Image (cartoon, rainbow, N blue to C red; front, side, top):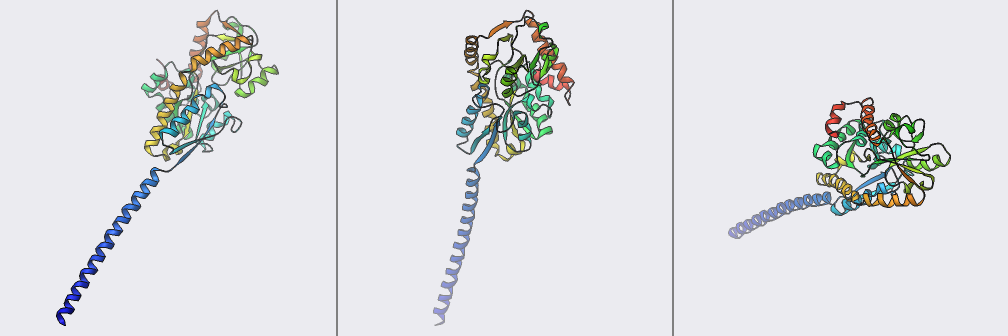
Length: 341
């Protein structure tokens, strides 16, 4: 009897140890499964990015945005979803910098002149002497982004559109002297040139230009050298001044907290998509300009080349840098290092 009892006890002990070992292994396996499941869930988390644009998406200057959206959603395998909350009808263009800053939206495609009161250095994007390739090589936008982050808690991802600017007028001009006393719509982007020409710069958003022309409140307006027909003002424009000047200042702003909450791989994806969308958009700009010039000519717009066109361009550049130096909070030499030749 004693032998059988000992044998039974040994069997019971063996079985107990085996059960304990199985339970321990099961617990470890469960922890690993939960850990892996949490990692998988993290990788599959969907990030919704709310974006406002300073102009309607029908405007040709916004042609890069749909490209950006497509690149982001495809290359992220749907982990980032871009939601366009609207253009200036949703959030006025002049308020979009603040909207990104306070997190009302996560991103905006907006002109630097629309929020320059917060970061006056942003206006350098208009007055650059460099190509976008040169700016990227120099780290120009990393520097500009740092200034934005310190002032507004936003990052600058890069440029949103290619192009230059033109002046459109009701009355004919032939030289820089003929601009004196004219009332011309122009934000901070154009103010240095217009003041240098002796004209009055009247600040207003693009959507207000048609009514201002119709009511005779302005004699003309400064705008990008394309997308004028998107404003619907071609019937009201008699002359486009040649040459073009400076550089389109449409920038892509992103709330710094929103960016930093993204995994590192998605942060890099967003930065790369911003650059790629610019170049894809830029490929079609020259054709757009040709088509628009043809359309303007059909409606009676004449193209006037100024007698002193070199003087005009010199004023546009040099006056702009002098004007900027009186308004920024940082050292102008730093901006020159990143944006001048």
